[in-house]
Length: 211
Image (cartoon, rainbow, N blue to C red; front, side, top):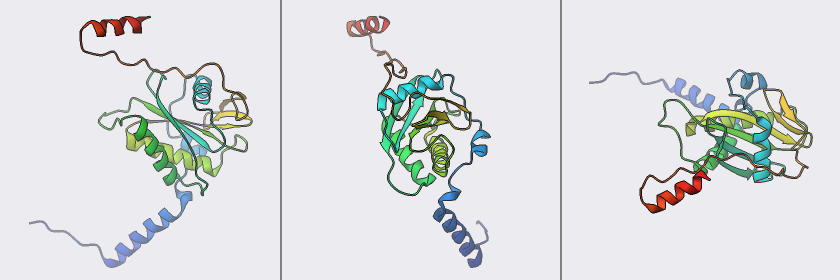
């Protein structure tokens, strides 16, 4: 037999009220630059290559978000772009949008004890490179989406007319920007896995991959 204590009605009402207030206040679902910097976000070895590759691959316009998954060698595993809906900035909504895109393009890594792959977010927007509350909501959404998909939370990068900026790191550049044409190279993709079955077909594929 199990014994327990039922919470009082007053406590239940207080908890429900607190949860309702938090869900109704989007400002609770954003990260300040100091919080982001203290979160231990892994640094990109070559952020300009990542930014230029995603810009070339997706050619984003204003209000376009690009979420990309990188392997430990910083090679692109998958990426997806979508346009943000015209609505107040809300980390919970951004989290859901990012998670939906991740689930669409790559399986989760929730069975791993430690995340191996890293998700980064490039957001193309108006204005300058300074942090905004909208950026804070994207940061919150990216961190939460990564947790729910078994990924490491990586860099958050803005792309404006002034260029690109890795927020929280102080690294950036003038090109690419929202007005520049795509460059002639793309972000390096991981090679497709070779088939495990034997036979002449597998040998042909191995030779082609070795070229």
